Image 1 (spheres, rainbow, N blue to C red):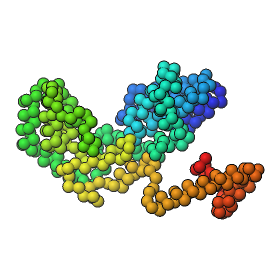
Image 2 (image 1 turned 45 degrees about the vertical axis):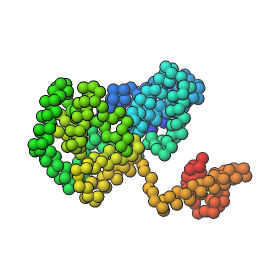
Image 3 (image 1 turned 30 degrees about the vertical axis):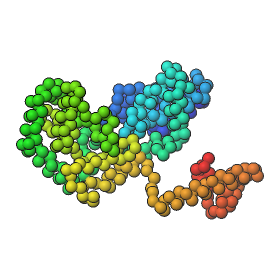
Image 4 (image 1 turned 180 degrees about the vertical axis):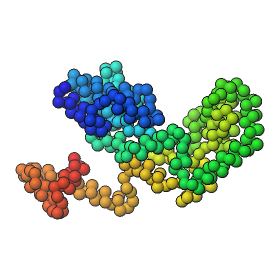
Length: 353
Protein backbone atom coordinates (compact mmCIF):
# COMPACT_ATOMS: atom_id res chain seq x y z
CA UNK A 1 0.00 0.00 0.00
CA UNK A 2 1.53 3.34 -1.08
CA UNK A 3 1.64 6.49 1.08
CA UNK A 4 -1.53 8.07 -0.38
CA UNK A 5 -3.73 5.02 0.15
CA UNK A 6 -2.23 4.36 3.61
CA UNK A 7 -2.94 7.94 4.68
CA UNK A 8 -6.47 7.70 3.27
CA UNK A 9 -7.17 4.53 5.23
CA UNK A 10 -5.67 5.89 8.46
CA UNK A 11 -7.66 9.10 8.17
CA UNK A 12 -11.04 7.40 7.79
CA UNK A 13 -10.29 4.85 10.51
CA UNK A 14 -9.66 7.81 12.83
CA UNK A 15 -12.83 9.62 11.75
CA UNK A 16 -14.93 6.49 12.23
CA UNK A 17 -13.25 5.71 15.54
CA UNK A 18 -12.06 2.31 14.32
CA UNK A 19 -8.61 0.94 15.17
CA UNK A 20 -9.09 -1.13 12.02
CA UNK A 21 -11.95 -2.46 9.89
CA UNK A 22 -13.54 -5.58 11.38
CA UNK A 23 -16.62 -6.83 9.56
CA UNK A 24 -18.55 -8.14 12.57
CA UNK A 25 -17.93 -5.03 14.66
CA UNK A 26 -19.10 -2.81 11.81
CA UNK A 27 -22.20 -4.95 11.19
CA UNK A 28 -23.06 -4.81 14.90
CA UNK A 29 -22.70 -1.03 14.98
CA UNK A 30 -24.87 -0.54 11.89
CA UNK A 31 -27.50 -2.92 13.29
CA UNK A 32 -28.10 -0.49 16.16
CA UNK A 33 -29.83 1.85 13.73
CA UNK A 34 -33.51 1.05 13.13
CA UNK A 35 -33.13 2.61 9.66
CA UNK A 36 -30.34 0.28 8.51
CA UNK A 37 -30.50 -0.72 4.83
CA UNK A 38 -29.02 -3.79 3.14
CA UNK A 39 -26.45 -1.71 1.25
CA UNK A 40 -25.06 0.10 4.31
CA UNK A 41 -22.46 -2.49 5.25
CA UNK A 42 -21.27 -2.80 1.65
CA UNK A 43 -20.66 0.95 1.49
CA UNK A 44 -18.52 0.96 4.64
CA UNK A 45 -16.67 -2.19 3.56
CA UNK A 46 -15.86 -0.62 0.19
CA UNK A 47 -14.46 2.47 1.94
CA UNK A 48 -12.00 0.52 4.10
CA UNK A 49 -11.29 -2.65 2.13
CA UNK A 50 -11.39 -1.89 -1.60
CA UNK A 51 -11.05 1.86 -2.00
CA UNK A 52 -7.46 2.22 -0.68
CA UNK A 53 -6.32 -0.23 -3.37
CA UNK A 54 -8.15 1.71 -6.08
CA UNK A 55 -6.51 4.95 -4.90
CA UNK A 56 -3.11 3.26 -5.16
CA UNK A 57 -3.85 2.31 -8.78
CA UNK A 58 -5.27 5.70 -9.84
CA UNK A 59 -3.04 8.79 -9.80
CA UNK A 60 -5.71 11.24 -11.02
CA UNK A 61 -6.14 13.78 -8.16
CA UNK A 62 -9.85 14.00 -9.03
CA UNK A 63 -10.22 10.31 -8.22
CA UNK A 64 -8.95 10.78 -4.68
CA UNK A 65 -11.22 13.80 -4.18
CA UNK A 66 -14.24 11.70 -5.21
CA UNK A 67 -13.01 9.04 -2.76
CA UNK A 68 -12.81 11.59 0.06
CA UNK A 69 -16.35 12.85 -0.61
CA UNK A 70 -17.51 9.23 -0.74
CA UNK A 71 -16.09 8.90 2.77
CA UNK A 72 -18.24 11.85 3.92
CA UNK A 73 -21.47 10.16 2.85
CA UNK A 74 -20.34 6.88 4.41
CA UNK A 75 -19.73 8.85 7.59
CA UNK A 76 -23.34 10.09 7.44
CA UNK A 77 -24.57 6.51 7.14
CA UNK A 78 -22.30 5.49 10.04
CA UNK A 79 -23.47 8.20 12.46
CA UNK A 80 -27.21 8.50 11.75
CA UNK A 81 -28.94 9.19 8.45
CA UNK A 82 -31.68 11.44 9.82
CA UNK A 83 -29.73 14.74 10.21
CA UNK A 84 -28.26 14.58 6.72
CA UNK A 85 -29.55 15.06 3.19
CA UNK A 86 -32.28 12.46 2.55
CA UNK A 87 -30.90 8.97 1.87
CA UNK A 88 -27.15 9.72 2.05
CA UNK A 89 -26.51 6.11 1.05
CA UNK A 90 -27.90 6.91 -2.42
CA UNK A 91 -25.27 9.62 -2.89
CA UNK A 92 -22.60 7.21 -1.67
CA UNK A 93 -23.76 4.58 -4.17
CA UNK A 94 -23.46 7.05 -7.07
CA UNK A 95 -19.96 8.06 -6.00
CA UNK A 96 -19.08 4.37 -5.67
CA UNK A 97 -20.15 3.81 -9.28
CA UNK A 98 -17.81 6.62 -10.36
CA UNK A 99 -14.95 5.14 -8.35
CA UNK A 100 -15.55 1.77 -10.01
CA UNK A 101 -15.62 3.31 -13.47
CA UNK A 102 -19.32 2.67 -14.11
CA UNK A 103 -19.94 6.40 -14.62
CA UNK A 104 -17.41 9.13 -15.35
CA UNK A 105 -15.84 11.00 -12.46
CA UNK A 106 -16.17 14.10 -14.65
CA UNK A 107 -19.93 13.59 -15.21
CA UNK A 108 -22.18 16.52 -14.14
CA UNK A 109 -23.74 14.62 -11.23
CA UNK A 110 -20.38 13.61 -9.74
CA UNK A 111 -18.86 17.05 -10.32
CA UNK A 112 -21.86 18.68 -8.61
CA UNK A 113 -21.70 16.40 -5.55
CA UNK A 114 -17.93 16.75 -5.19
CA UNK A 115 -17.90 20.52 -5.61
CA UNK A 116 -20.80 20.98 -3.18
CA UNK A 117 -19.17 18.78 -0.53
CA UNK A 118 -15.46 18.90 -1.28
CA UNK A 119 -14.76 21.69 1.21
CA UNK A 120 -16.13 19.43 3.98
CA UNK A 121 -13.33 16.87 3.79
CA UNK A 122 -11.10 18.37 6.47
CA UNK A 123 -13.51 19.49 9.22
CA UNK A 124 -16.89 18.11 8.17
CA UNK A 125 -18.46 21.55 7.68
CA UNK A 126 -20.65 21.78 4.58
CA UNK A 127 -21.76 25.36 4.01
CA UNK A 128 -23.95 26.20 7.00
CA UNK A 129 -24.53 22.49 7.69
CA UNK A 130 -22.17 19.68 8.67
CA UNK A 131 -21.27 16.05 8.06
CA UNK A 132 -20.04 15.78 11.64
CA UNK A 133 -22.47 15.17 14.52
CA UNK A 134 -21.10 16.37 17.85
CA UNK A 135 -22.91 13.72 19.94
CA UNK A 136 -24.09 10.94 17.57
CA UNK A 137 -25.20 8.72 20.45
CA UNK A 138 -28.00 11.15 21.36
CA UNK A 139 -29.21 11.29 17.76
CA UNK A 140 -29.03 7.50 17.41
CA UNK A 141 -31.14 7.10 20.55
CA UNK A 142 -33.67 9.53 19.06
CA UNK A 143 -33.80 7.39 15.90
CA UNK A 144 -34.90 4.41 18.00
CA UNK A 145 -37.52 6.55 19.75
CA UNK A 146 -38.96 7.71 16.42
CA UNK A 147 -38.90 4.22 14.91
CA UNK A 148 -40.68 2.75 17.92
CA UNK A 149 -43.22 5.58 18.04
CA UNK A 150 -42.26 6.29 21.68
CA UNK A 151 -42.58 10.07 21.33
CA UNK A 152 -43.84 10.31 24.90
CA UNK A 153 -40.18 10.28 25.97
CA UNK A 154 -40.09 13.96 25.02
CA UNK A 155 -43.27 14.75 26.98
CA UNK A 156 -43.66 15.59 30.63
CA UNK A 157 -46.11 13.69 32.81
CA UNK A 158 -48.71 16.37 32.08
CA UNK A 159 -48.12 16.09 28.34
CA UNK A 160 -48.49 12.29 28.44
CA UNK A 161 -51.68 12.64 30.45
CA UNK A 162 -53.20 14.94 27.84
CA UNK A 163 -52.38 12.49 25.05
CA UNK A 164 -53.75 9.52 26.99
CA UNK A 165 -56.94 11.36 27.85
CA UNK A 166 -57.68 12.08 24.19
CA UNK A 167 -56.72 8.56 23.14
CA UNK A 168 -59.19 7.11 25.64
CA UNK A 169 -61.91 9.38 24.28
CA UNK A 170 -61.18 8.13 20.77
CA UNK A 171 -61.20 4.45 21.74
CA UNK A 172 -64.59 4.84 23.45
CA UNK A 173 -66.19 7.05 20.80
CA UNK A 174 -69.28 5.45 19.27
CA UNK A 175 -69.22 7.97 16.42
CA UNK A 176 -65.67 6.91 15.54
CA UNK A 177 -66.66 3.21 15.53
CA UNK A 178 -69.69 3.88 13.34
CA UNK A 179 -67.61 5.88 10.85
CA UNK A 180 -65.01 3.12 10.61
CA UNK A 181 -67.69 0.49 10.05
CA UNK A 182 -69.10 2.68 7.28
CA UNK A 183 -65.71 2.82 5.52
CA UNK A 184 -65.25 -0.95 5.87
CA UNK A 185 -68.70 -1.49 4.37
CA UNK A 186 -68.19 0.90 1.45
CA UNK A 187 -64.62 -0.17 0.61
CA UNK A 188 -64.25 -3.85 1.64
CA UNK A 189 -61.63 -4.62 -1.00
CA UNK A 190 -59.31 -1.84 0.16
CA UNK A 191 -59.69 -2.92 3.79
CA UNK A 192 -59.09 -6.58 2.97
CA UNK A 193 -55.94 -5.94 0.92
CA UNK A 194 -54.47 -4.00 3.87
CA UNK A 195 -55.47 -6.53 6.51
CA UNK A 196 -52.84 -6.78 9.25
CA UNK A 197 -51.06 -3.65 8.00
CA UNK A 198 -51.24 0.01 8.94
CA UNK A 199 -53.14 2.12 6.41
CA UNK A 200 -51.32 5.45 6.56
CA UNK A 201 -52.90 8.77 5.82
CA UNK A 202 -51.12 10.99 3.32
CA UNK A 203 -48.01 12.87 4.45
CA UNK A 204 -48.62 16.28 5.99
CA UNK A 205 -48.03 19.18 3.64
CA UNK A 206 -45.14 21.57 4.23
CA UNK A 207 -46.40 25.14 4.72
CA UNK A 208 -49.80 24.00 3.30
CA UNK A 209 -48.01 23.36 0.00
CA UNK A 210 -49.47 20.14 -1.38
CA UNK A 211 -46.75 18.48 -3.46
CA UNK A 212 -48.33 15.03 -3.75
CA UNK A 213 -51.02 15.98 -6.23
CA UNK A 214 -53.97 16.82 -4.02
CA UNK A 215 -57.11 14.80 -3.48
CA UNK A 216 -58.73 13.23 -6.56
CA UNK A 217 -61.67 10.97 -7.31
CA UNK A 218 -60.43 9.70 -10.68
CA UNK A 219 -59.89 6.03 -9.77
CA UNK A 220 -61.21 3.66 -7.07
CA UNK A 221 -57.86 4.03 -5.27
CA UNK A 222 -58.12 7.84 -5.40
CA UNK A 223 -61.67 7.68 -4.09
CA UNK A 224 -60.71 5.54 -1.10
CA UNK A 225 -57.73 7.79 -0.34
CA UNK A 226 -59.97 10.87 -0.39
CA UNK A 227 -62.55 9.35 1.94
CA UNK A 228 -59.89 7.89 4.24
CA UNK A 229 -58.08 11.25 4.39
CA UNK A 230 -61.30 12.92 5.58
CA UNK A 231 -61.79 10.18 8.20
CA UNK A 232 -58.22 10.61 9.54
CA UNK A 233 -58.64 14.39 9.67
CA UNK A 234 -61.90 14.02 11.60
CA UNK A 235 -60.23 12.00 14.40
CA UNK A 236 -56.58 13.21 14.26
CA UNK A 237 -55.26 9.87 13.04
CA UNK A 238 -52.06 9.02 11.23
CA UNK A 239 -53.40 5.57 10.42
CA UNK A 240 -55.51 2.50 11.16
CA UNK A 241 -54.48 -1.11 11.57
CA UNK A 242 -57.53 -3.35 11.25
CA UNK A 243 -59.83 -1.84 13.90
CA UNK A 244 -57.10 -0.14 15.91
CA UNK A 245 -56.74 3.65 15.50
CA UNK A 246 -53.32 5.31 15.65
CA UNK A 247 -53.78 8.77 17.11
CA UNK A 248 -51.41 11.53 15.96
CA UNK A 249 -48.96 12.00 18.82
CA UNK A 250 -47.20 15.11 20.05
CA UNK A 251 -43.78 14.44 18.60
CA UNK A 252 -40.17 15.56 18.24
CA UNK A 253 -38.25 14.62 15.10
CA UNK A 254 -34.73 15.14 13.81
CA UNK A 255 -34.91 16.15 10.15
CA UNK A 256 -32.16 17.06 7.65
CA UNK A 257 -32.90 20.75 8.17
CA UNK A 258 -33.72 20.98 11.86
CA UNK A 259 -35.58 19.64 14.88
CA UNK A 260 -39.32 19.49 14.37
CA UNK A 261 -41.79 19.73 17.25
CA UNK A 262 -45.34 18.75 16.32
CA UNK A 263 -48.26 19.74 18.54
CA UNK A 264 -51.60 18.11 17.57
CA UNK A 265 -54.56 20.48 17.47
CA UNK A 266 -56.45 18.47 20.07
CA UNK A 267 -53.75 19.22 22.67
CA UNK A 268 -54.21 22.33 24.84
CA UNK A 269 -50.56 23.28 24.67
CA UNK A 270 -48.83 24.52 27.81
CA UNK A 271 -45.58 26.17 26.70
CA UNK A 272 -43.73 25.31 29.91
CA UNK A 273 -45.19 22.06 31.16
CA UNK A 274 -46.11 19.70 28.29
CA UNK A 275 -42.75 19.00 26.61
CA UNK A 276 -39.43 18.10 28.20
CA UNK A 277 -37.67 21.08 26.62
CA UNK A 278 -34.37 20.28 28.34
CA UNK A 279 -34.28 16.88 26.65
CA UNK A 280 -35.33 18.40 23.32
CA UNK A 281 -32.56 20.99 23.72
CA UNK A 282 -29.96 18.26 24.23
CA UNK A 283 -31.20 16.51 21.08
CA UNK A 284 -31.10 19.69 19.00
CA UNK A 285 -27.62 20.64 20.22
CA UNK A 286 -26.29 17.12 19.62
CA UNK A 287 -25.56 18.09 16.02
CA UNK A 288 -23.18 20.83 17.15
CA UNK A 289 -25.34 23.96 16.99
CA UNK A 290 -23.40 27.14 17.73
CA UNK A 291 -24.51 29.36 20.60
CA UNK A 292 -26.27 32.48 19.37
CA UNK A 293 -27.35 35.90 20.53
CA UNK A 294 -25.99 39.45 20.39
CA UNK A 295 -22.98 38.76 22.62
CA UNK A 296 -21.99 35.59 20.77
CA UNK A 297 -22.48 37.23 17.35
CA UNK A 298 -20.31 40.18 18.35
CA UNK A 299 -17.66 37.81 19.72
CA UNK A 300 -17.54 35.82 16.48
CA UNK A 301 -17.30 38.99 14.41
CA UNK A 302 -14.39 40.24 16.53
CA UNK A 303 -12.64 36.88 16.29
CA UNK A 304 -13.06 36.85 12.52
CA UNK A 305 -11.57 40.33 12.28
CA UNK A 306 -8.69 39.37 14.58
CA UNK A 307 -8.04 36.22 12.57
CA UNK A 308 -7.74 38.22 9.36
CA UNK A 309 -5.21 40.52 11.04
CA UNK A 310 -3.29 37.50 12.35
CA UNK A 311 -3.04 36.03 8.86
CA UNK A 312 -1.74 39.31 7.46
CA UNK A 313 0.83 39.49 10.27
CA UNK A 314 1.85 35.89 9.64
CA UNK A 315 2.57 36.63 5.99
CA UNK A 316 4.51 39.76 6.95
CA UNK A 317 6.58 37.83 9.50
CA UNK A 318 7.40 35.10 7.01
CA UNK A 319 8.60 37.70 4.52
CA UNK A 320 11.01 38.86 7.23
CA UNK A 321 12.28 35.31 7.65
CA UNK A 322 10.70 34.70 11.06
CA UNK A 323 9.86 31.15 12.16
CA UNK A 324 8.56 29.24 15.17
CA UNK A 325 8.26 31.11 18.48
CA UNK A 326 9.64 34.33 17.02
CA UNK A 327 6.97 34.31 14.30
CA UNK A 328 4.14 33.71 16.81
CA UNK A 329 5.42 36.46 19.10
CA UNK A 330 5.64 38.83 16.12
CA UNK A 331 2.01 38.04 15.15
CA UNK A 332 0.79 38.59 18.72
CA UNK A 333 2.46 42.00 18.89
CA UNK A 334 1.26 43.01 15.42
CA UNK A 335 -2.39 42.36 16.28
CA UNK A 336 -2.04 44.19 19.60
CA UNK A 337 -2.39 41.15 21.86
CA UNK A 338 1.18 40.27 22.97
CA UNK A 339 -0.12 38.15 25.88
CA UNK A 340 -1.53 35.44 23.57
CA UNK A 341 0.38 32.14 23.62
CA UNK A 342 1.50 30.18 20.55
CA UNK A 343 -1.53 27.88 20.66
CA UNK A 344 -3.98 30.80 20.56
CA UNK A 345 -2.09 32.40 17.67
CA UNK A 346 -2.14 29.14 15.69
CA UNK A 347 -5.92 28.89 16.17
CA UNK A 348 -6.41 32.45 14.93
CA UNK A 349 -4.31 31.79 11.83
CA UNK A 350 -6.00 28.47 11.14
CA UNK A 351 -9.44 30.11 11.22
CA UNK A 352 -8.52 32.10 8.11
CA UNK A 353 -6.16 29.72 6.31
